[in-house]
Image (cartoon, rainbow, N blue to C red):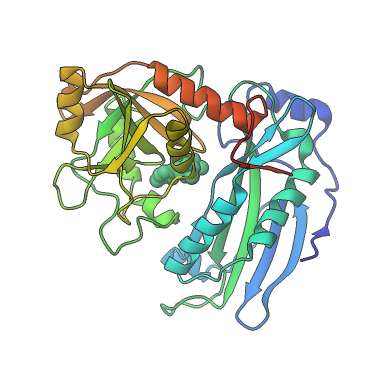
Length: 356
Ligand code: PLP
Ligand code: COI
């Protein structure tokens, strides 16, 4: 698909960009451009372009505003020492976006068009990729229903966009273990629901739980299984791993209610490469807590594109602090290896990098 490039009349100066990149934070600054492709039931995908970043004119009746028909992705572009820019496993994000799109009755986008949209946007905004430790240009592809129609059915007009935002540590400041709030009042997803899709409604439903977490001095919320059987599922925006003292890595199995993280699947591969045994299975909160007390579980970490790999320090379950672990060696080693591959300092032996 041919992308038309619409130049920005007043792109930010090199100095303005440098000021932003000096302390990128997470998700607050956006680059000068956005990639867009439109879809209608009649014409399919068309009108691919890279245009200046700015507000979108949307009809107040657009169905995304009423019925939340939308999906999104999260990925990053990394600056390598020689100035080249790469992204990580983009075909996996393309496939996941299409899986989410099928669940949300949105049209699928060709993988090549998805990847091209990233290439074109990052080429237009290449000055915006930060190069500090743990920093990258966060890419947010998303697709939403623009048709103005209040009946409840899948929209016949849809827009796909990509925006980009320079990013440092998701949790702010230096990397340190995070505190997690165990959500007892709210579940994230149920069997047959939308938990496996990366769709806004899952996040909207998590916000009240996330607010409870923040009120309790925690940075993220841990969701348990919807049947109240005490099995761990995932965090608001990350998957979870536990490390045992005999070289095993435990992570909840993919049941259809958790997001199938691309970082998760990469961690599983890197762990196997190191000779660790990976167990994808049901894990209860009690197993986690008891395991930490007995010394069998020695580390816990969260992983995702935004969070990379972040050690989990303690869990707050109501009035109790349980399952406390610090930053461990396995967490640190896998984090360094993954970041090394992404930033080009460790060999990409699985062919995960894609040059933008
Ligand atoms: N779980 C949820 C709910 C997420 O939002 C994310 C982030 O995208 C993840 C897990 C991790 O997925 P990935 O590693 O593909 O970024
Ligand atoms: C990501 O990691 O890309 C996400 O979408 C999660 C969100 C917490 C930013």
